[in-house]
Every structure is written in C-alpha cells, then in structure tokens.
Image (cartoon, rainbow, N blue to C red):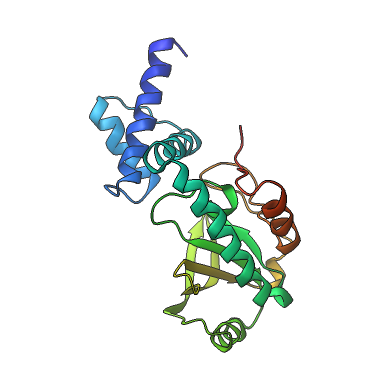
Length: 205
C-alpha cells in the first residue's frame, strides 16, 4: 500500500468515526460507505481502524472526565454483576474494552435458560426494567436468538443484559468491530481490575 493510499484510508476511517461519534450514523458499514463517498473512493477501512479512530475522538472530546466515567461505569457494573452472581455474568462491550463515549451503556452477558428469572431478580433488587425482549439475528447464515433486558443502575447508568442459553456457554464469540474474541471480565477479574488498573483498555493493537 503506498503512502497516499494509506493516508487516505486513515482519513476515511477518521471521517467514519466522526459520523459515528456525533450520531450522524449508527452503523459502522453505513458510516464507512458515507465517508468513502465523501472522499470519492471505493475502498473502505476496517471496522478496527474506525474503532481506534472513534476511541481517539472520544478522548479528544471528553478529556479526563472520560476516565472518571469509565471507573464509575465499571464500578456500577460490578454491583449489578454481584446481584447476578449465581448466573456467572460477564462484563462485555465498551465498558469492558475501556472505549466508552457519550451515550455508552453497560453491557453484561450471562447464560441461563429462564430469562424471566433474571428479570424477577432485578426487580426484586429495585431495578426498573424498561424493556425485555427476544432478539433474533442472522450472522454468516446462522440464526441466533437471545433475550435482552434493558434497565439502569441507581446512578442512572443504562444497562443492557443479554441472556443466552446454557448450551451456548462454551461457544467463543468473535467481535465484529475489533476482530478478536469477546472475552469480557467476570466478577473476580473486574474486582481485580478496579483495584489495580481501573482504566485499562482491552483492545487489539
């Protein structure tokens, strides 16, 4: 790849990230297509290249408050995960990665065959569940169904809890944005992180 091509690709990634950050686009693919059209080219950056630019833009726009918010969100995630301890919850998404931006929510995943039980447990612990629904998506020709619970913490941090079947617990999941395996953090790992390196990032380099 020549230097001009590489520079242009970086500019397209930056433009796509800007569109995502300021809410002009919601999906990576659409943001990349619109950015490429702006520069009059037909090649696209990878999702990872856009994600890294998006992280930089968030850092530039939000400054030191971003790290403070990350620690707060990870702390709130831990409190919620402890309530769900019996179900082996994992922190995933941007709060796990350390790449939060304005509007980010807390994503927690767990495996259980009776999602209604999770809803009842949350309500019993004072959480208001704004929505709970089954979502079916098709990825690479495979259909996946999961139960999504939307709520918020006492500090008004939005949370999305994804419940998948116990049969899927051993399945490895690849991140469509960063391209690596979605490992996440369990309760013990998150506790250790908050003590030792509370703003650590988990992104491929």
